[in-house]
Image 1 (tube, rainbow, N blue to C red):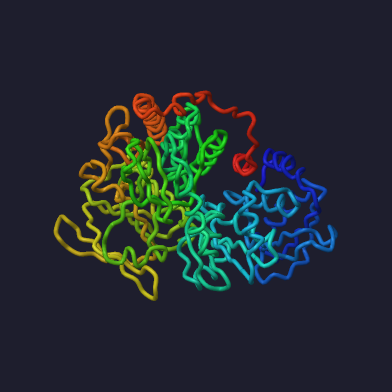
Image 2: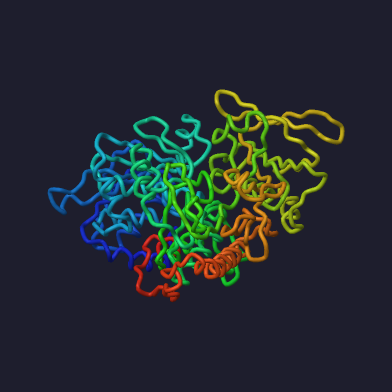
Length: 557
């Protein structure tokens, strides 16, 4: 449950509650209900602004609702947000933030987004299925919770799929987070507030594109929001030049990474925490941050000023004197029949997020490297049977992981296995077939889930024909990160830099930004750009920036 140390930190945060908050629980006689009751009582003891009752009649038990207390005034919102869950783990910060927002503590959200939420008309009943081990779920849960607490037209129910397995099975949910709106499937996977609002208001991207295209050229524009991109943007901003960063989502692959034990100075952390820390650091500098945007094309301009132009999928166009590309990589797919058809219906790529949905079921893990063996070890504690399939004659993971794997009674390892197809029945995965390369025989595994862990593919499709790439699709760079196109640099997993590690990507981003800055100061005088030469190269004052409440809560949890 909640430790004394966590409770003390929560007490500090809950001091920010301004108006009374009501929690109404619906419980039964199960152990889960008793656990939830203890958690809610601990929260009530942390603030005299919280009123707790056990009078709820929700059909889901255990569950509880959060709302402004009716005693706070006539304008208090009706029940709008409920949790059919015991929100610990990654969702503990979501619970505390919901209490703060219900108690009139202002959220760290742009005024324009708050106005968008308040302007939504109609009736929006959201159900979001999550798991407590999912590090992608809190963004979705927190966005939908905030919407429910500030707009009476929005109702949100947060459901722990592991706690309500019957609903998960009935709706055939095999990946989290999964969102339903008014009973119909709305979307799955990591989504922030901006993306949810954009799906609800289709005119929003076009309106944003008009504004983006009017922005003046950047001295340095970074494409990508992972460790390499954030590092490059910070190093550029510290030089005092006009810096922008475009990213689909901040954090990149960090958001899909759990235990991190090799980032120097942090003996142990996880991807979401490190991603939040990077975002917090990024926002202490004067960097034009453009999120929820994907890049479509790169091309030099015809303005004769050494500018490059970036076309975004939204239709916007941005210009820059120098560019750092750090678009990272994504999970490699098997490319076999059935994989795409059954994605999120039994085919998964994140064992930490989706693993709890396969409790007591049969699963396969494809890939015998470190990520594949780690996935098999994690899933062995949940699934009834795990089969690890490796194409090569031997596993490629570290010896310590292989030793751990061999000690598990419900894991079978098959080497020399070439996966051939994924089959389904009634819309979900039912089997996987593979060829034993030693004798050519075909085998069929009856199962409910396939976790693909076969490495990464660089995100460079949009650069083909523009920059020089190697056979693997990686951007070829020199010692300073310079690409084949003048003024365009690259960093991180998207490049030929060996050893795809977080700390290497961060250093790579710094190197590319410094290389780009060195190139700029040599190029700009040729164009008579005195404004660039006269810029103040001092960094901004980090101490003057506000604290990030979500980051503090994530670290407390």
